[in-house]
Image 1 (cartoon, rainbow, N blue to C red):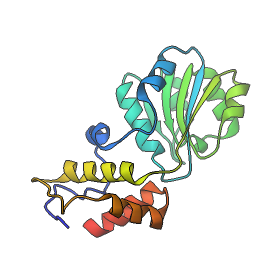
Image 2 (cartoon, rainbow, N blue to C red; image 1 turned 90 degrees about the horizontal axis):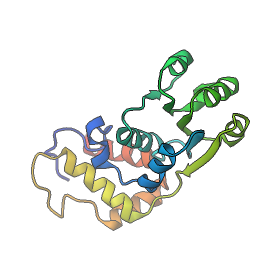
Image 3 (cartoon, one colour; image 1 turned 60 degrees about the horizontal axis):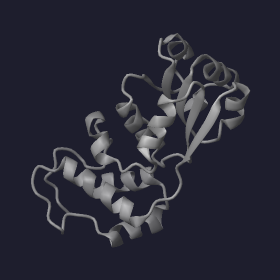
Length: 194
């Protein structure tokens, strides 16, 4: 295993490297077109924890970078989102807002793009929004191999050889062990490359 890296290739991806590290699992142009042509829309990135929702949300926000992103946790202030002048907002972990606040958000902002573990379609309908959902489930060995090798390449100080790169078989073995838990795979590899 190659150890000549600027940083651990399986730690968090630097903001400026997100577009180089991700292989989007949806058609970016289609989603951007929906956002830019809609007057009332909610776009949800839905899936279990560790499936790449936040990374994809940040990826899309970099493409539409004139709109703000709010990374929510238990200490986040709802007022910061509501008071922001933008009519289009990106919200990571929308579950940190209660039902009433989510309805307010959907009603107040023209377009809300967010990550969630459970569908918010009903809330979107209550707020009279069109609803578009992108599911984050499953991964194949070819895609995983490409992602892992991109991360190695971004972190390396020198040329990588075939022996340094992941093979389809390596990725298949990881999928057998972790399923589609992308975060679980990254955490496992982080420890190996530490």
